[in-house]
Length: 274
Image (cartoon, rainbow, N blue to C red; front, side):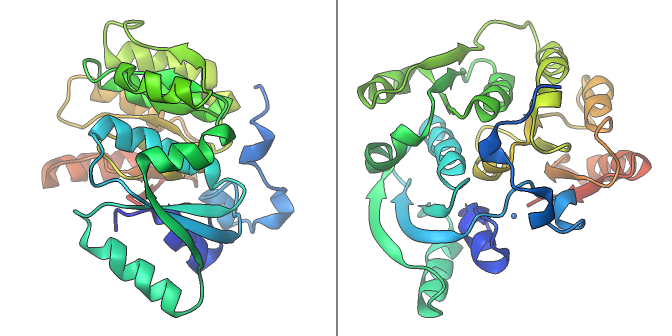
């Protein structure tokens, strides 16, 4: 289920990620604690209603553009679930869209592409944070900063289109750190207290959960048990308050999964791939 945990989640439990599930956090990230049950608060920070939905076909988009649009989707869906991403490579995307339309649970306002999504929704973002494929960790770092500031993640090639839509640069994380570990440790020290959600997510550039982490205000990073940086980065993950979720995947093999799940269990954290 890659399409947008948000919209589907919104329909099922009034969560708004069309297609999936210190300083104060931005108000847009939060709902009154009383609006979420104690159980909900272990997994969510906001549960917006479903609104008229725009279906955005990202089949022709590059990986960087997809990530940018997913972070825009997260911003848009903070107030109400109005944006659903459709990737032709995801066989279930159209099925669920048809299913929920048939049940009368969503109303499709229209269909567009990434450019059309910017035309319609760019004004809801405060700006963009620059990252680069040459430093894969920069996407996680940029997403964390952008989430706090109400912005989206972009690469240099996307800047002309974003500028044309009135968006300006919020930050540029390219070349700031020599390696992922140092980058994550600095970002956690600076931004963890500002995130709406106390847990974390473990994401690669091409993963589909960026809308959810942006919407819910979740810090993102990446590691694997077989990587040299596992000890230091997993320490950042397990420093999350017990009882909360770690979203995404922490393993590519069965052996890695055993190590990762064991580490989370010892810390009292919940593993939630979606």
